[in-house]
Image (cartoon, rainbow, N blue to C red; front, side):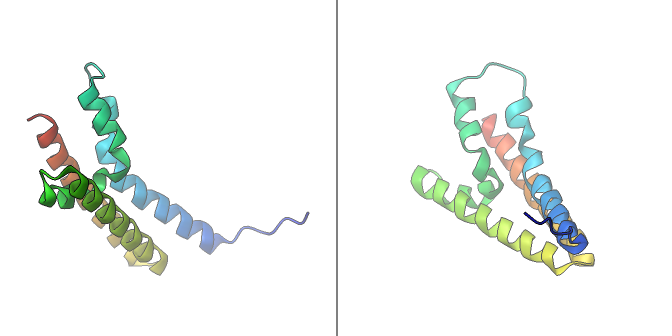
Length: 118
């Protein structure tokens, strides 16, 4: 089995995408790190963690749970696709992708925090 040399450009793309995705999901760490009991309500939020970046869009469909979760999932997929596309462009687009990921994740996390405490 032959080892292929690592491509620095590919590694840079992979790292920039990983940072963008971390910036998108890390604002939701409060779901896991919050003090208090692990109630069924909290566990519901933990199960929604993979699609929480789309929370802002999902709220447009509230109170229809199925449509809300579908909207959240679709929005999260769109966010990820846009961030990957921006990171793969390279250059200053990577910084733009990181800023966009932080804005999307931060705003959605803020809305989710407010709804969690209602």
